[in-house]
Length: 317
Image (cartoon, rainbow, N blue to C red; front, top):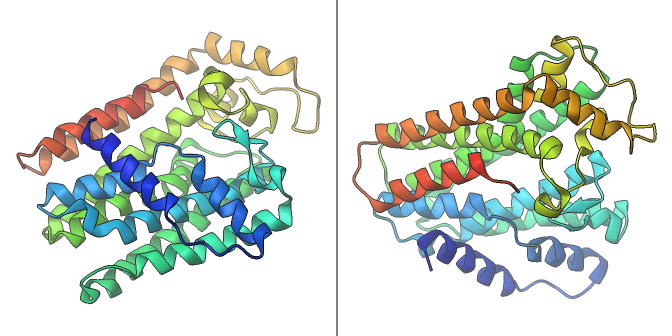
């Protein structure tokens, strides 16, 4: 078993041992459900790899590692509601399995639980800065989500605006994860901020790859409906670039788009947007890898992080 898989299993094991209340079950069962769906556990794994990179003991930061994954899953519950998504990791979303009100409240409870685990950090003298950065990151994620919602009714969205939205909505939490591992291990200020920038570039590559997979991936591999963003009329890299090139789908999320979606995907390919978007993914991945080299350290975790970045940029799910 490789180290990253070992860290993933450690996190999964910690979640299996969560001492959640049993009542009211409508509040706590959805939390156990979303956490049991697995996923890549990228954020806690990044935190643990970063901590060990600077000579820390990765299992000693289980509190903040679980906290960042809890917070991430809280955002997924609420994002799925706002996106009216039916599938998450190949399974029904929380609001589909229960209902919207239960999903909102369970998401709120999971957010609060994330803070409960975050403050289990030792030594406690590190907590003020850690909580401040966590709060800053949390607000930025909300800002990114609001920008995403605003884009739904905006006439024109530029690529720079879109990239800022995904930086806030997705990339800052990966940056926080790598920063936290370094910070808690006593890395220098410069090393901490470099780790943060590596995480941001990883996040941009990761989200742009999600855009790619939404259109060009298969439901069997991604666990999501192919063309979900197209079907809902969402502003994405592909939609923005296609519009710049003079192509806009002639339907909205209110239309029966089961036939139109494959035609849109075909048009995206004809415009060369599949190759263009993959190049963007690889560009941000290369910047993240350069950041690893700039750390000027000799440690196996640098190689593991580089491989992870390459896997994220070339993944099919």
